[in-house]
Image (cartoon, rainbow, N blue to C red; front, side, top):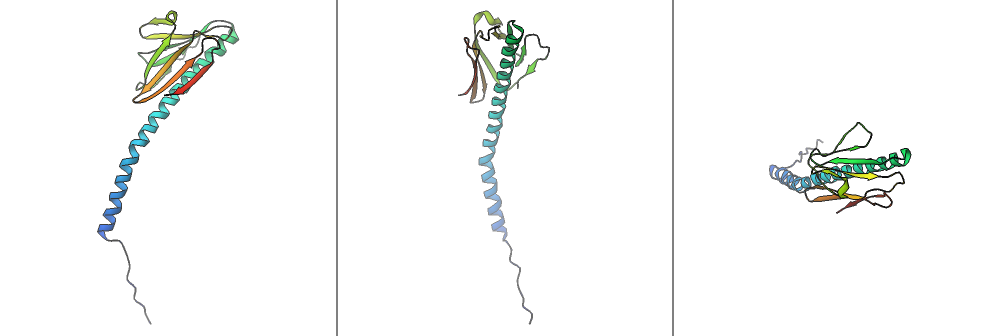
Length: 150
């Protein structure tokens, strides 16, 4: 009246096969995860710059005085006129400025200036990290800021 049952399990070969497949899948997924981190870091830096530019424009409109966002290419940082705080961008990101010549302070620093009517000196800030690229465009006439992924 007793029934004997045997415990069924996995053989060593089956376990090794599952582990090998898991490692192979993780090897394919891991590089995609790190590029996602780089992409979000780059997008975050572009959004930070756009936020700083919007703040500078708002200050120019509010105070009825020229306000600039100055970018230090060597330090990967930026600062808004009249503000003590300097904002740091990740050092891995390469920054390129395309601005009016009158706004280039020296070889490592340049500004985008907003005027009391909301217009600006205009320009383009390009952020690069590896193969990824983000641009922040500032329209000279309207002062409008546009983010673009390339």
